[in-house]
Image 1 (cartoon, rainbow, N blue to C red):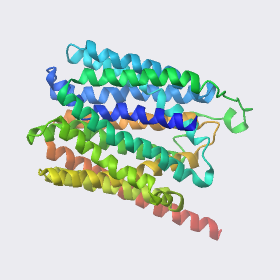
Image 2 (tube, rainbow, N blue to C red; image 1 turned 90 degrees about the vertical axis):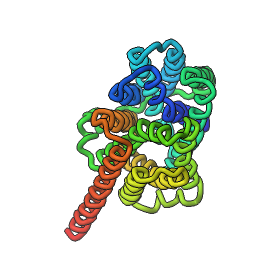
Image 3 (cartoon, one colour; image 1 turned 180 degrees about the horizontal axis):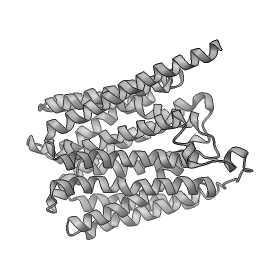
Length: 388
């Protein structure tokens, strides 16, 4: 059952990553303006935010089975709607529906996995789930870019829809044996208020890390395919470049290096990861040769591999089972908001390729510096408490 949930996680992110190399060129082919191109990339994540939050609340109340089933079936149907798109307006409508429906899946799946992870191995467990995300990051963009070069974007979405439909039917038979056992409400659960999530330092840091991780992804999804096309390469090259960071990330997730996430403080690996991602953005702004672009994406992959388990570990350490579904719902809402902010800001500012990557790099490095300062302050407070 746990393995099947990993499979759901994989295909949810596979669907997301397969869109990265094709969505902005597809929107342009429909006659969209630069602003509408950015909106087409970002509106998926905007509606995904609402799906994430609703999924979190419903998972805590009803358990993951029903939410996963509804999300999988609804996502499958929405993916088939891409074949009916006739212009930029209909593209925005389909993207909104697709994003909302897909938003129901991931918080429920990760809550299921987190509640069954041993506390002493929570970092390694998160790294394994991250490996499935990394695998999706490898295969998704390559699949999207290669298939789009030979067919079309609606065809890619129809294939994804068929996969989601098979998963939904399989989930009905495999996961229905899992019954959600409703625990007696604890005092903490009865008194829980949503603003607690935004007052807990560990949860706030996890939310911030999720936001800026996907802020950079939103910029990559919008800008990298367009830069690659301007250099004379096709969508296949864009897909392979976006897959390159996943290859590096999955190696770090699965090799013995994943033990570092149980031994080093999450804030330290968070700062290291996001700083590498910032460096990779600055590098992308300066290079035009293909092999340097691959090096930049490899650096980005190392940063991603350190950041993703760090923010998940922070969230697990800072939340209890009674409200972990809500925590994951808002956590993945910040993932979605980050993509909207990244693609939307660049589209609104109408920056060129270099300006977009430089701005993103500076933002990420500033966040890394802030994380290091916050970690130093936390250590000072801890030492003062121990003295007292």
